[in-house]
Length: 175
Image 1: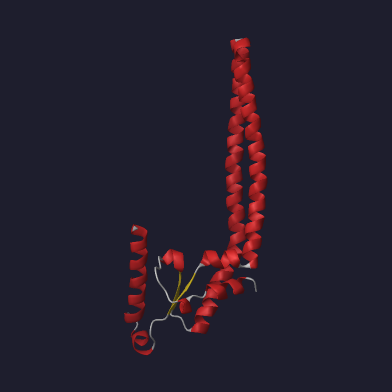
Image 2: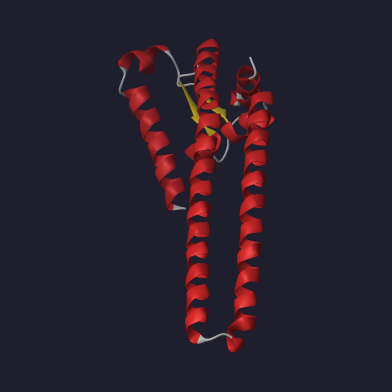
């Protein structure tokens, strides 16, 4: 809720400063604001869908590999627990230490996989975000908008559908 209030305050302050802080704008042109939904634009564009599909395939591959290793480690742990009563203390401690090392290695691999996914996501999304920014700028100029806000980030509660440029942004992504 606090984020929403801060976002709304920022939007109103920006609009106020833009409209009243510039005498030319205050006299000659009314404030005209456009809106768009970046998530919708990306998820509905062909390029956005392709990037999401590629990332999902990478995620599934990494997940499958990590889950197989986790299952193997769990089996080794259960085997060690079953054999513990028949093992001497030294042999038990040695196998438990080896298992602990394998578990730590697996945790490191899991962390590396998360970093790899994060980097892959950034790499896939950066060109699309640049395209969105360019498209928003071009559409704003064509329609004469003073500013364009992203619906979710700006905390917009209501806006006229006439001011929504999401479909044009989606089309521009695929050009």
